Length: 398
Image (tube, rainbow, N blue to C red; front, side, top):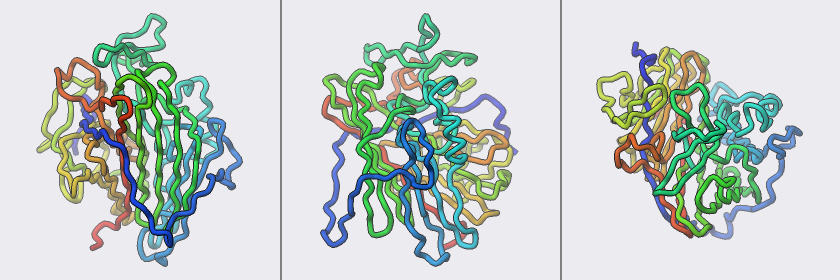
């Protein structure tokens, strides 16, 4: 068995698009019906001052194939995808994400104490990480509450500190407590789609320009398709990266036999979660998950950033396989800009977080020695889009 107790390996491989998203026209006969999004009627609990919102559909396969049935989101916590449900042949309806009940989540996501920066959002469901996923290192501010770094000569002061860590850091972006607005539900022929906006502005005074975020989360039998577009609506250029932090369950609960396939050829070396700037090949190492049927998790502790992918039809196809449960999940990075994936799965835990994102860890750090670390440079009026699709499959089925 491979030993992941050695120094952690980190890498997030960078990619980006600068574009204005387009759309296809829909024939009148099949046009989706838009309506104001309604709170989840089954949950009177509010989180971040807003009720959860659920989109759903009824199974249509008669139990003959796996299909998605619902997605629940937290508009008061940056549109965190709190839970995804699916119907599996012979298993009934199961949760896809490792999340507690809404009621328990409300006791964690208080916005106070340890959650004052919203960090508790990254311990459940699938939080969105904008404008920087993962760690950003820097000098600690005199009050110990912030770190100071720079981009293209412009100073950035970010909330954080990272007490107890080898170096001070900020982590996981600036929208974990943001409230989404203008939510609308579209009913489609095979499901529903939720759209929402977050007027992020200058991210609480921590960023260089003003940003608008648009979310589109589409549910069908075959897929959950998530698209986020960030647009610079300010007057200055700004760096931008987008990522996700979804905790995917191992349905059988038997981590030892669960497998993952990661089509990456390189990882980045890190020392106590701090990147060194060195990339190494995965071939022949404990980080080689290139086999088509993946490699077993066993007792491996993963907090590892992968890059330089072998793409399938232009996408990054990470797969989680639970043979005992006859369950498989594709996590497909569809945007050509997504060129880094972090896999996080602590030893003994019943989940695998698959985090598609733009940037290397510590994207402003000098350790990268001039390497393009994947932060998109958005000029005023420009946009960048991030898109990930989830799809179910049955292992061994043709």
